[in-house]
Length: 280
Image (cartoon, rainbow, N blue to C red; front, top):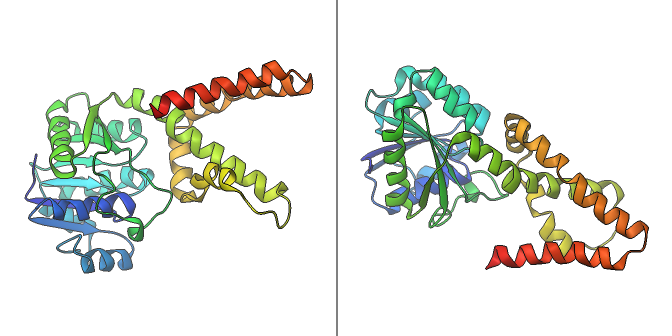
């Protein structure tokens, strides 16, 4: 699908980057909406959008492809409130990192045949349109989660990402997506925030953070409201992942308590080997 009229609801890092890239790719008309007037103005000034109508419904009426790029809980509400305004032949997608809830909502609203969930793996700890970059989504993996009767819409959305952003769409079931992302995305966010919370409470006053502490806590600077929504929406997958940390942490604790150098080395070696394979 290569729409001549694209609508983006939410002009933060992902929505703004998509708008910038869509214009670069030659999409004729890109309409954008954000509840933040400053974001709408900035996006228009930088040429990311051709117009910023005053209401999200105005965008929904006018476009062939509607992308919901607000935080995940807001996207659930938007899907429902915008339904009466979405064109009869328009396709709808989103960019959130939790997929079961919005796929189920689309099906419940009777939009299943025209909706496919989307999740570009191109996030950043920065937020707002100021964090948008024209190259943020290029070559990104984009998970596409079809509804029960939405294979056609999923193919259209996948083609859009490939054609517009040179991204790499991957079809995946919404439940499998949420299980996988709980481990590979949501858990790392929690661990980074855990370390930052620990430093805030127990870090030596005046201590200078080295690159290790800065690198491992980078994600802690992410938008708290957004991540609160993500963790709560996916909590039935995040909680088991969190509990899964108890075993390896306990293993290290026991090795340290007993002075078991072999055990400590083996624990660190397994982690180092995994990291080398991940980089390969």
